[in-house]
Image (cartoon, helix red, strand yellow):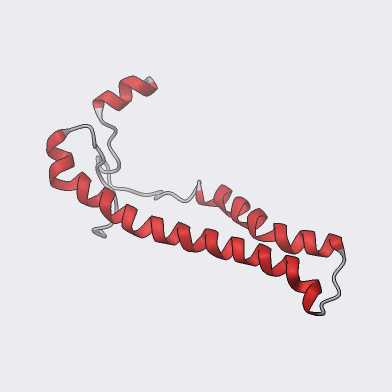
Length: 109
């Protein structure tokens, strides 16, 4: 099994956090923050480029410019729907993400 599969996540427990959780959280932050920054930068730049396309000679209608601007946001939002269902389906019995006891009480498990 991959070392990047999360089999246990109990950040409320001090021992787990110090031994495993903190490094996992830091790795996720160092990967996700630059990735999101890049994604939003491209999204923003594309909006600026589309608005200026008529100024450099492209003959698009207002409706076409709207769709060119809206498409990245719409596709990103639509893909998030599918990503929410992309979880591992088959795990050996007894393995998988464990919810800490304190979290279970909070969400009513």
